[in-house]
Image 1 (tube, rainbow, N blue to C red):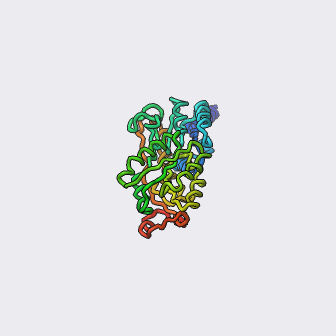
Image 2 (cartoon, one colour):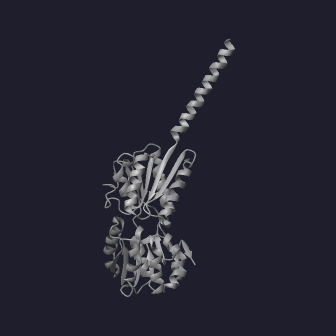
Image 3 (cartoon, rainbow, N blue to C red):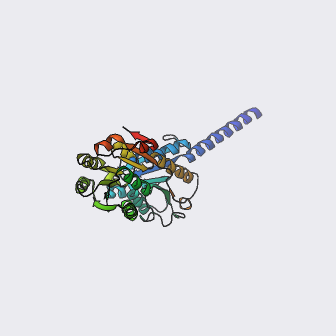
Length: 324
């Protein structure tokens, strides 16, 4: 009887241990819901970088992680709908990619942790009040472009350039902040900025076409509306020997002449590291907003030739990536 009682007791103990382990495993399961304003190479790379950082930290999709992703397909109204849906589902952390999606998320929830990425100026966009002490349930990674280096590169590759056309969406706070910064740095480089606004992807081609004959090169900031219609601007550039430069390096792979910019996969990895800190218990509002680190020179010699630009050997030599 004593032996039987001992066996029963051991069985109960094992069952309790198994139950405790199951509860602990269940407690470790998290849901990370990711939304982006639109799909294009830079934002897609940021999303993939977030997932890679989570995997490296031990969060495996389908095991202890549910990784959800939805794109607003370029529509702020859809971004707001996704934000409301995510807020209702109460995931562990929400990742908002690009300014419109981040704005929609901070409007939709003041309690669920939100980590944004690929946002140029989160203060101007009213996503946080202070970069060093964001407070509340929000923090993230900013991607304010290295504009001075980018425009020095344009002057180096197109030394005769006097007027630069900037195609942007005036409805995107991200783009307005970049445009203002570009206008501030232009006089020191003897450049004149010619604005060309496009509020919808359908307007981008016309905006670029209107710059033909008025400017010596076109610069496209990290504007989601404009980059979503990148091909139409590249066609204008190739048809008119008008060099097109971009604020993100992923677009160089698609056919712009060159850029000095961030590797958006790495931007995503940095963002994912912040998400991991939140999953481990840190309050988002106590984590300062950081700017993405590092920038690379990427050039496209084929696109340059098509748009009438000769890449000097010295520029090729210092490029991180040369696309032929």
